[in-house]
Amino acid sequence: KRWADNMTDKYDELSTVDPVFGELRNLMDMCVVAALIEKERLFAVAGVSLPLLSSESSDLALKKWNAAKKISPEVSFLRTRNSVIVTASGGVQIESWQVASRTDVDSNVSVVRKRAIPVNKSLWWQ
Image 1 (cartoon, rainbow, N blue to C red):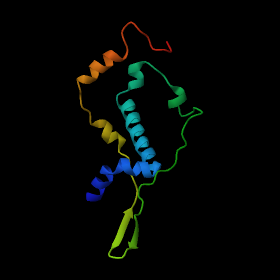
Image 2 (cartoon, helix red, strand yellow):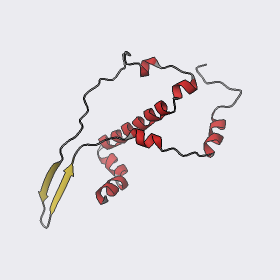
Image 3 (cartoon, helix red, strand yellow):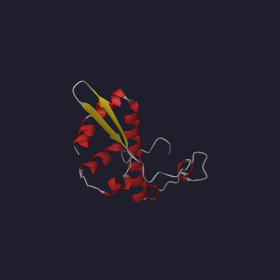
Image 4 (cartoon, rainbow, N blue to C red):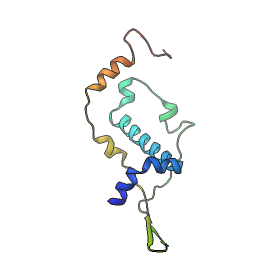
């Protein structure tokens, strides 16, 4: 628990040193956004169809691989002058559906939404 809390607290700093951690955070955020779009049926609510992004026959369709169900941990030891540093790492599971299932209603969002697009204006592509 202490290691996980420390990792969370230092994540921004870690992302600065090694950009792959920032990319991983972005990937996790996008997984949550995708889960919310699916869960709330936002394409249907918005009345849009995006086959280029959502169709499995699209040129942009993602390749599918068999996801690992279990990854054995790797452990390493580094002896320093006064101690031994032990690291352990293993698989990571992104629980985007679990995050998407926890929703909070914030009344301030409706105020922002009303200011975002004035009633008498249309979106630029319409």
